[in-house]
Length: 104
Image (cartoon, rainbow, N blue to C red):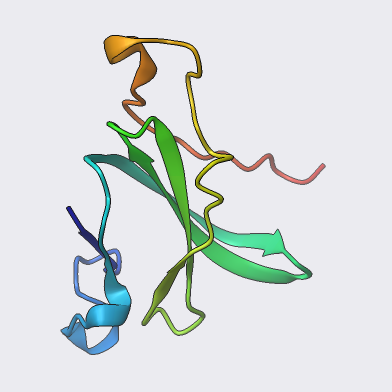
């Protein structure tokens, strides 16, 4: 399965044309997706996309290019497993919700 990067109106990036840089392939039953804008990482602000992979029992994390025209997998696939030790449906993630605490 695959997922495509689009903007909030549903258009495939600036100009409305999707290309290979906006496609994320090889996902095993992607479930839910959430976005965090302006996350401070490595001393700079980046936008990230997090996807649950239902059948792989893991999360995948992608960094969005500053111009919105590309996406790169920054996951550590062996480190983002969820529900370790559970079996069956109890081991499969069914959603994701990111939260950033407001600055005090």
